[in-house]
Length: 120
Length: 106
Image (cartoon, rainbow over the protein chains, first blue to last red):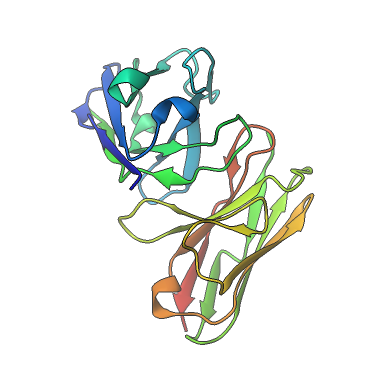
């Protein structure tokens, strides 16, 4: 059974940093692109970042580029999102999700999400 | 950026009836269109990908159609568990989601 379990979401002050993790199981992580998608309270879904299967290629939404860094450790079956210079508008539930074996694909499995709150 | 527009924002339908949800892209996304279902407090669930292919385990009452800029999700006979928010997403040129359609019980 495919499982994605996020962790690391907490209350953080504006300007602070946070590292989210996503533990993957039930499939071969190294075969898939992986993504982070966020959802502000009461709002819709917004794509944040993606990383290719080997970790050599990363992409970001304009709103987070230069502040967030996505990474993965296929040996440890883990996806990460380092979040720096956090702003109030980064407050959201962050989901990790599985893409396909190539860049153009839907997101077929999602974790339960982890809540990041940026507030003083 | 490709803008995805869903209509209506809210759809009220009785159980057992048919629901039709629409999604329009600001430019062609070919058939690189997915539909997701989200219930309160839960993660999104993939229903349809490639505009018309049901994801694993999705009941046959869910069907998708369209290509280019106009897409439709049809639920043929609504069950109680189908009342939720539905999002379309294009993955042809980066990734953008529609604002969602809330399907509520009439």
